[in-house]
Image (cartoon, rainbow, N blue to C red; front, side, top):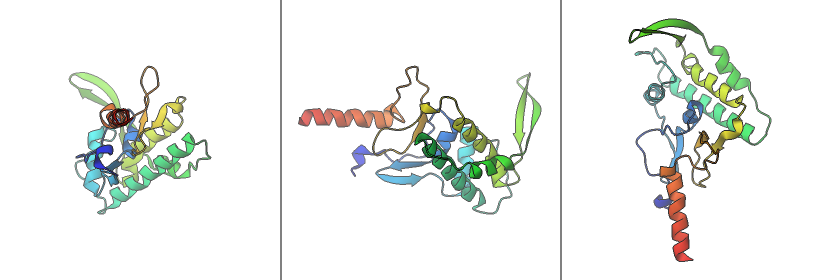
Length: 195
């Protein structure tokens, strides 16, 4: 596999799926022709959660080393498998995701920001599963979405990223026009020059 036709090495996870649960599973991506896992340590997961804005991560966690990483990898695989099964019209085993949903403990809280009041949901974060509960809820919402047909895997044969097609025409084919869309155009151009 040539490096020209695969996603170049990137410094961090891509947020291009237009849905947080899909961005979560896209933390496993193909780069330079090989699968690349952006999560190698607990700190990688914490950085992703903070960057995503999906979870309010406390400044300090008391998890055993590696516990958050293990839980995030398990949840990621659970969500990926369910998305693939639903896209294929297969029977889904909902029990693993429901376990994450059952671990959620939250309450609403009134907060003031810039002189305006709003209500926010605050989640417990005593365990890694509780910390990841908002992601599990987002995945459940995605799987039950009335427009689930808009969930797609990138059409580039060397890509494994997923996205939610929010385009007006609902004809999005690539995880990103700058990445896979451009690679497809270059390949088509080269093929035309040869032919």
